[in-house]
Length: 72
Image 1 (tube, rainbow, N blue to C red):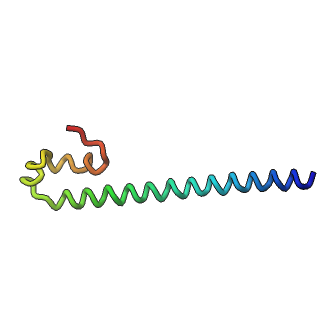
Image 2 (image 1 turned 90 degrees about the vertical axis):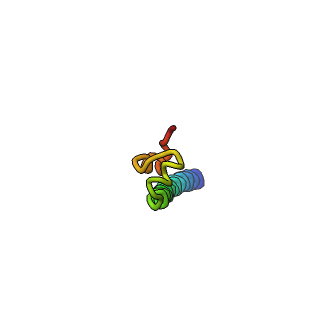
Image 3 (image 1 turned 180 degrees about the horizontal axis):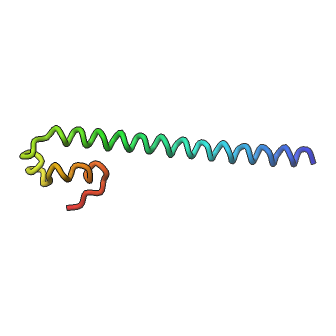
């Protein structure tokens, strides 16, 4: 009986550790995505309006491009 209880506690502990790991990974992924959006926005903002126009979009399109929602 003691070994069954110990095994059950180990399973619960492992499930909790896996959950914490998944949440941590999710938070890290969100921070990385936000950092990439800021990098893209910053880089595109350095272009002149004429250069952006040559690429086929305007300065108003930058947030959508950075977020990955831009559609032509």
